[in-house]
Image 1 (cartoon, rainbow, N blue to C red):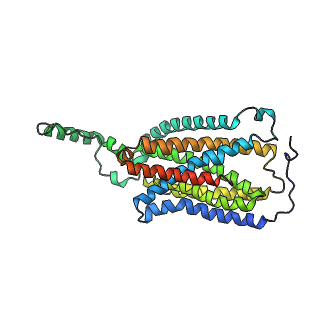
Image 2 (tube, rainbow, N blue to C red):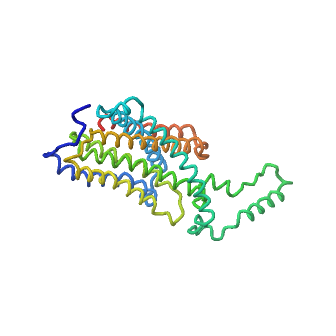
Image 3 (spheres, one colour):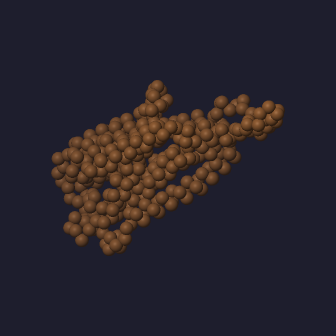
Length: 341
C-alpha cells in the first residue's frame, strides 16, 4: 500500500486565492453555457442551423463526458494502489456503470408509467394550456373525421383521416401527458448525472496541485457541458406551469461545481484525493455517473433523435450528415479536453 493513502497535511497553498476566484469564474462560465441556448430560444431570432449545431454538439459533449471524463478516471481511482485486492481484482467501474444503466432504465420505465397515470388523473397536463380551452374532445373530433371521410369516399379513395393524438405524437404538443412525463424524466436523469460529476470535479479543483492547468481546462469543460445541457433544456415543450423549469435546472447545474470547490477549500488541509476513502467514493460516483450519461446520451439523445424521430426521417442526407458531424465535433472537443482533465 502506498504511503500517500491517508489524510493530507497541507499548510501552504500558493494558489489559495486563485482557488477562491475559481468559484466565481466557473459559476459565470457555467451559467453562460447553460442559459445562452435557453435565452436564445425564447428571445433571439437565431437561425435553425445554429440551434441544430448547439443541440447536436451538446449531445456529443455528453457522450464524450461519460467515456473520457467519468469512466476512464473511475478505472484509475478504483485501481489505486491504496485499495485492497477486492477492488483491484475485478472491473468495478464497468460493473457499476452497467448497474447504473439498468437502474436508470427501470427507473424511467416505471416513473413514466406512474407519472402518466398521475397526470391523466389530475388533469395536470391541461391546467395551464389556454390553447386547448375551446378544443373539441378527441372522440368528437374522430367522429367528425370519420363523417368527412365517409362523405368523401365516393370522390376519393386515397383520403386517410389522421387521428388527433397521432398528430400530437409527431408535432410534440405540450399538452400531451406522455410527452410531459418523458421530458421531465429525461431532464431529471441528465441533470442527476452532470450534477454528480460537477461536484466531484469541483472538489478535485480545490485540492489538486496542478491547479493552473486544471482550472483552464475546467472552464471550457463546464461551459461545453453546460451548453450540452442547456441545448436540451431549451427545446423542452412544457405547459406554462413548467415554464421556469429549464432555467431552474440550468442554475442548479451551474452551482454544483462552485459548491464542490467550496467544500474542497473547507477540507483542503486534511483531504487527500488519493486516499483510500476518496478513491472509493470518487471512483464509485464517477462510474455511476458514467452509466447515467451513457444511457442519456445513447438512448435519450441519439436513439430518440435519429432513429425514432419522424422529423429526422424526413430530413435530407445532407442535413443528417450535418447533425452527425456536429455530434462528432462536440465529442472530439470534449475528448481532447480529457488530455488535461
